[in-house]
Length: 284
Ligand code: GUN
Image (cartoon, rainbow, N blue to C red):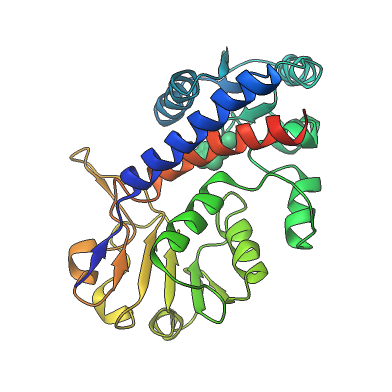
């Protein structure tokens, strides 16, 4: 029997745990975790994502600032806001919603965030720590960490598993590769450029699809009993959201599978909230 992984339920449980930690930090240390989310322009998806992040943080009892800039804002103005939040002791987490308008230098802005407030884990200092599997505390990509939480909820162990990741993004696939390697999985990175991609998908005990191509993966490409994680969010002409995996088809062979919507998506925000509280605890 296939398990359709309920990301909404697991995210709700995680948010409950986060709320308990927020209440405890307030009561015992007088600390209110604070997050500043920076939004540039009016990309419809980014407007919805940042609103959800802001509302969820408030619901969990945190301080939340949603700082909006017009799409023609200068690099210097955004940098100034980042420096302001870096120096604000009531803010523990800073996030710049991506993608940014082309005229802004994304790398410079991400690098300007103090590493101990870099809640997305995109700053090169934190990327390096993850890559090197360093001991100690550091933030990592929220979507990648959220996927690890889903995997741990459904699998006894990750060690020794063959994992294929389709996609090479800096936001999700590369940090996820490191997290999995650090847990002794065998990870193969492939892309739409890969010759004979089916060879790699069919050998995967865990198949992660982050290619941005609707219904790319069908059941004949998936190993019997595999766990399939769909990171795709594709809005179709009829406004429906679909993933990169044909879920109804692949369900026939997979043991565990994430739906779209309601799989990986809800985990990103819940993990962002979790990691904001982590930062408040680590840097108090
Ligand atoms: N845009 C899409 N996903 C993300 C994310 O995880 N973090 C940020 N900052 N922007 C995004």
